[in-house]
Length: 185
Figure 1 (cartoon, rainbow, N blue to C red):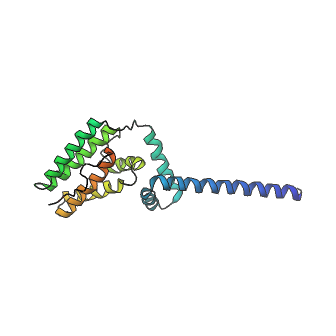
Figure 2 (cartoon, rainbow, N blue to C red):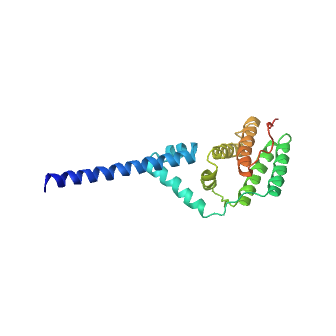
């Protein structure tokens, strides 16, 4: 084999390797930009960039199969009124308010076109594609709700859970339901 042929082969291999590295870098940047904090959480969960990125891409593909839609103004108004009732209920019965908040959030998810499963992580993964900046609030609220079931959450924890649910709720609705208002006990 001639020196020129060897140089050409080495050049071709180098070019392919560089193109592959460039593609992987662009893929990582695109996913990191889209998923934000969820990208970091998934990376920490999987401990391997390729596996984490494959997971995020599979979520995107799964979501594309759903008929996700924007709520009508009438639906937004109805859900916002329901949320205000949940929030008002917090003063008298924080535990029940948290349960209602979770149910209402599931109703909004269904109305938007998200499948709601009994598997929390599946719901969170589905939401993470279009709502990556607030899905962590959903996880936090769910964790507090689980602690509450076993008597391990105090009123302040429940307030934080309700505020966390509200952040996702508002993102799903597309409008704030109680601007400047905090849940108090």
